[in-house]
Length: 272
Length: 245
Ligand SMILES: Nc1ncnc2c1ncn2[C@@H]1O[C@H](COP(=O)(O)OP(=O)(O)OP(=O)(O)O)[C@@H](O)[C@H]1O
Ligand SMILES: [Mg+2]
Image 1 (tube, helix red, strand yellow):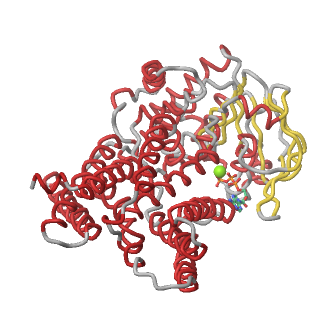
Image 2 (cartoon, rainbow over the protein chains, first blue to last red):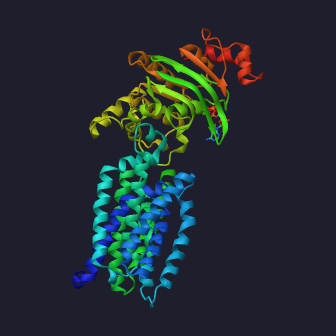
Image 3 (spheres, rainbow over the protein chains, first blue to last red):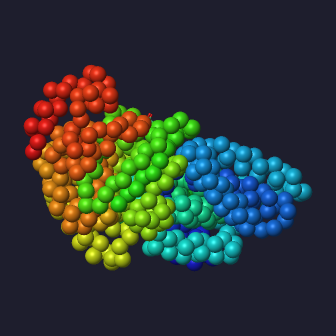
């Protein structure tokens, strides 16, 4: 077991995994309450289109993926604001298009691409230095945001009209939020791939919402749930020789199921 | 002072209020009345800065949008509590009203507490607002509007669903502060009884301003018929007037 933790690629996977679990725990509850749970799905698929473009024109997919994700995040925000429709609707329209575009671009690239599965479901053996740096930058930016702007986002989510009245820069804060979500999603895609990314962002937050009454508790629980899942997921994936992405998602989903059961017990208890 | 000049507001091209010109003076309690759909909410939302409009609005002699950039309006939306989707506690909600103040966390909390106390909601400070009764929520939102310490208070049917005890708390408070701080209070309501007791001025709108005798404050029967249609029972009016708290 000790030998396991000394493995280079395991250490890297743990670093990046714990970082994204942490930042997702801080942001996820906002997504859940803003009814933007679908956002992770939308952005991660947008990332895939960017990855496809990177492969086609021969630049590092991490940069093109990031550019696409942030562009898509802003675009989803723009369409939702201007069209007065919910983000989930804009995402519903855009994400299959992004996926189709990604596949099209990769197909157009010369040569055979074995790593498509890696992009779709994650591959911890393929984690690069660039991925680690991106995760660390994301960590710093998210902590900055949480310290300086999360109060504003709370206000906007609770009551956008009144926030405007007292001078919260509602539009600016909204776009900052969208860009940060996009950045975090790219970091997650680098870890568990396009398909599984939204689970890490949303499931811990959804689980904590079921059992916590106050928002700060919710954040703490979401961070904890995510980090436990990443730790156990990576450990088990090595022990049982399965991919770590799905393994992490199994643990997150199990925690969600337990939280759900617990919330029912709590309600039952109160009613009795 | 809020000066509204030739104000017209449309929703998707359809006129909701038309050519409204009115001045709301400092230190006074202005009531806005009119039938459902008459345009009361539209008028106050235009003043608060939510709606595009034709015409001119000036606050304290400053052009509208310029004023709003620097100042808050103590705004209470009509039935605002139906839209809560985030777990904020009472104290956090009132703290929103302190956004423009340079206060640290504990100062902010203390200020917010003061306003919760004024509406006798301080014992619920740490309770989630979405788990409160409608009337309790409304009191917290009132505390939040007052916590802005704005010179302009705009209250859209703030007393709907509020018990008479809280209503008197509210009116007493407004009466106390409006002259002391020279506030301009603009409030929409359907409650004829309170209007006759507290109003310094009443504006009746039904798409346009419905003229009435200002000295009287209470409408004549003919004016009520013009405003609300012929079915309004005159007896109701005297009933509500007498049962003031
Ligand atoms: N968001 C909107 N979109 C389109 N039309 C609207 C909108 N809000 C109000 N209206 C219309 O504008 C008119 C005035 O509505 P408003 O809400 O200002 O009335 P009100 O006097 O506040 O009524 P109530 O007493 O029911 O609160 C109505 O005809 C209404 O249908
Ligand atoms: Mg109204």
